[in-house]
Length: 598
Image 1 (tube, one colour):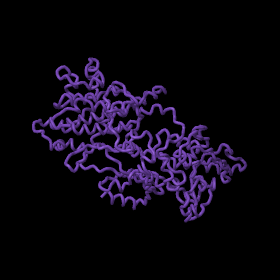
Image 2: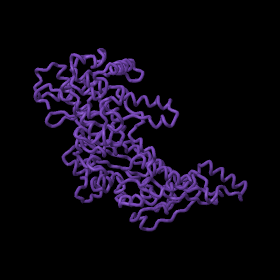
Image 3: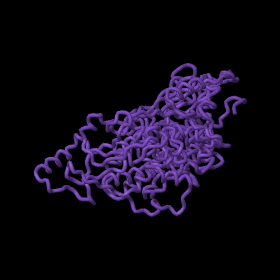
Image 4: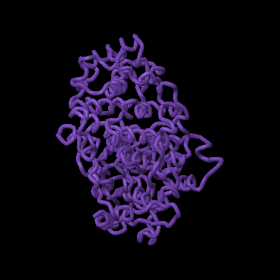
């Protein structure tokens, strides 16, 4: 059962969850899963490579750390930066060169007290049990420096990491008075400023003289190996952050809880997810059970093709609702395909579609308005057509996530039990935001799956090769929400016709090139293909047949409305392509096949 599974995880991982009783706290996983069976997704471990004891013994000490007192040894007090010993890696070529130079000229010191030499160094401590120097394991690094705020934006996270790396490189951190001395400091920001990473990002460079090397050596503020681990963990937890941001919706696989097992040389994330029984949409499309979701309805008067279209319409309504909810919460999936769409068999015999796998998803800024044709990067808005949020995890519920709205239970797991860091997780990092933040709506990563990826994403690689000016680089990018609509259009084509509209290499596919040419001509002639708004008008089946796609494009006959919505969603021009709210208002979505249809 879900309850037993959670107990086993807690026992195996030895995680102590601090359940703080607040009026709006998040329930623990045990409470959430009393009556639900769950699935567990194990993410790839994030490694933290350690130097051996013999390497530390052979290393040259640059800076000695303080010995631990009894409270630190017993775990009553945390380790701090003062307990860290800094050693020069014995395998460093630069260190060997410095030793040779010392032998040749003992009086010639290398570097200066203001400009130290950068060497490969190891952060170590005196093990209280073995009484020997050992490299700081991952658990000790987290104890000393903590995590970067879990809910920080990419710009805030990179700003913090860059500031620390500047200090590690022997440079002073930014003289940004707003970052060093904020005029208004909230309690959450105060906790961040008391964290080791924040102190390191605002530290001054440290230079120590090493007699063994006869050189001044720059001492890092944070071990470079730990910085690399933080960056890798940030990339791995992207899926988690985005699923937390979405919250709960019946057409999106729900994330109940996140468990993190932190060991000396690696950390592993366990995602406790809603279990989906029924398989992938891909299996349903290729089988003879595609009409299972309408088995209890009166469809005897419908032909076989009409029954399939009606069944697929119900699934597509659910897919559109799930996508719309993601977009309303500022998340673009970017890898929609039948394999990532699961069909859940409910206890009453009905089937429901759920979107899964947010590993390639991305966030974007929420817009206040939308242009008439739904174009531009700001198309998703909070409006009457946007689904209402189901939980407080949704940014539409509160503009800013707080500890009270999220609860300490889940976040204590995400911070490895560090209760003192929990309030940092969704507090803004008080650091200067890069100027490039103005382009947050544009996405540039080349992601997605062949057959389903939008043409504007693939064209990014060609643009990278051609773009040479800074102006062209600033205007490049694509709208992830429109890319999701393209993928959904390909999926709908596969649902109705059990084949794919274009080949794997889209930009070189003859069918796509012919379709693109047809679209350009149809747009020139006017009618339904002139823009997204025109595609939402009721179809004149006598005069607008030519606007429903080229004759060779559809392998079998379906309703004019289904062909029209596919052609509108597969518009090669993303600006004129439907957005997801417009898809949900298309005539096909409200088409009635039976009287009991919603």
